[in-house]
Image 1: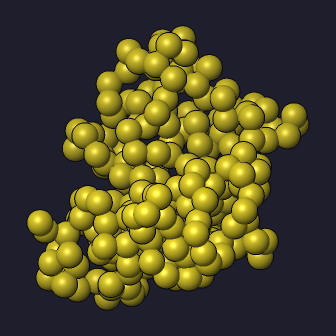
Image 2 (image 1 turned 135 degrees about the vertical axis):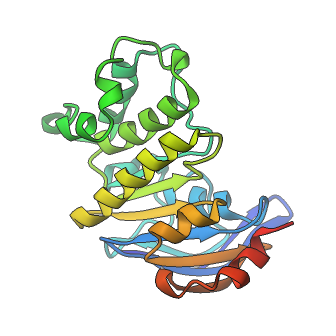
Length: 231
């Protein structure tokens, strides 16, 4: 389980996170919702080690990872799919997938066949440059690259952003299947309410760097949550 306890985060004099407490359990999808600029991506960056926290503690699998660098957290099973995908546009699809090997031992440096079961379009594009893929295909590649790391915590930052509806449905199906396998925790930042509502086992809503609403996914109050999502 991921545990975030009383986490603060600053960018210089500006405080982005205030006393964040949350959990993400193996076998569950935990959704973080909120408007732009409320601290959702800052929270993910704190969890994966891309930005140092100012206070509090982050624990993963009963280990304090608060001060571990990002590559050590990746080796501990934390995989991150950032907003905007951040694939390598000049590398081929296969080369992009192989960059996930950096976080695993030598015996695991193969692309799992399940990656192509989940994203069959990638198998036919292994020799194509990442920058030549559509936005939806690049998003599938970014998730597949994370899965090459054999993660136990999969962190996704707005995977539906700028993606055509058919690919959104495919990504939703993949997330649902990964959850049903019960081998990883999935932490999902999302602004698309209906997508989050269909997937969330647990949810938190952020505003101004704080969690203002939380609960079980099947108890999500649509009006209450939407009030915190609209500008």
